[in-house]
Length: 138
Image 1 (cartoon, rainbow, N blue to C red):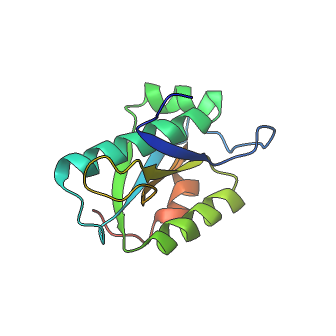
Image 2: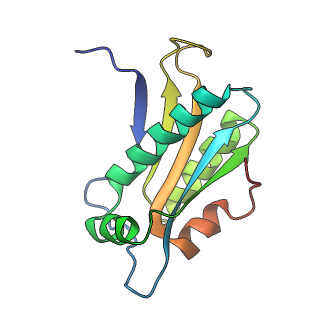
Image 3: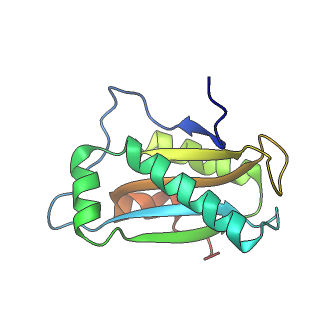
């Protein structure tokens, strides 16, 4: 197996229905990064990108299409610990939302396996906000 730069934990079961958006509803994605790690700007940007693309892959076809067609609305939020990210991931899973947790490979700033970020959505904005709406901007 090829050595991958990061490890992804997928956030939904294959046959699980994911809330999708109608034409009238806004769709967004929230990416939550750990500020307690003190990641450099480049590392932060890479982890956010990994999370965004990974969760996008788990979203339903209609939600992906709507999100892409409406400007790919996203927000980057802050959390203070690994436990915070896992609690948010549990909430996303309970809500039936696509999500991805990112673990760093440890090639640069962080130890291998360090949980760095979580993405929730793309999905209905209201659904994403129920999980991440109380978090501060990064």
